[in-house]
Image 1: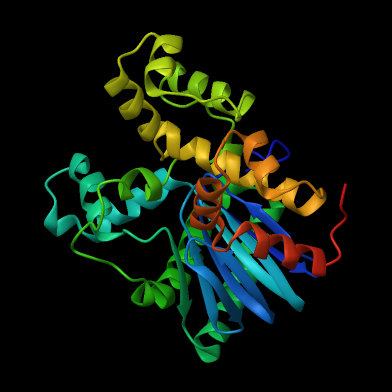
Image 2: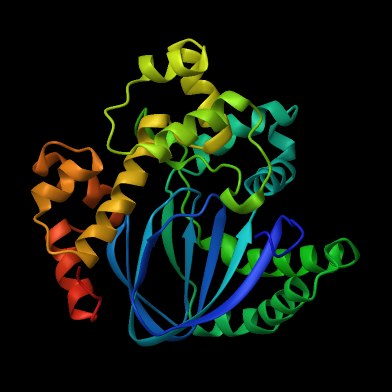
Length: 305
């Protein structure tokens, strides 16, 4: 899914982590299986421990930090969200007339962008041979030739994991769709469906400290405010303002970890004038307060500026 590889909608990698990582957000769905060791994760679910027997499910554009307890080894399956939506479509084909109903159905059922699934060590052990082969096939290339085998391995994994995924028949907030809805992978190198969406993302990423408004973005790309929201969510999975908040939280974490600037100064630098508001937004994205995040990352030995 990087420029080193031909794009493929299913990719698996195994990694041993010995030092703090994050916060990082990917524009694809991630299924992370803990193989050995343990860690503390920080994300929208707060601060949670994970160990062997746990699977982490992360929706697109969801920040997550990892603090290993010594070390942790994980296999991560990266899934293109269009591919995921197609699987939802066929799984629930009996309930839908056509593909256009899938999005609304998924929005209603899959409401939590981050979950830790406690599948147990025995079930996790069942996954290891499938994960190893999936990693090997992902690394070796030849995705077209190996497509059916990789899909079969993925389905074996999901058959074990899916019963543990929490679902809901009721959406709990009107903004949850823009926060949790998955989107195209950032590293896919495919342009969004609309040039305007890509331009909005470039504007936000290029000036995260600017006080962007929907009206200003609409003027920049020559669309109405309602069109801006619809076009951007369809392409990137978040509203422009939610996407900007993610970018600011990511930058704020970097400054907390690598400088001695006060939280108030950092908040202003990333575009949040009010430190209390910045702290609430940061905790919502990363799962802990800025001061707690700084303490943990400094204990890990991260350098300061």
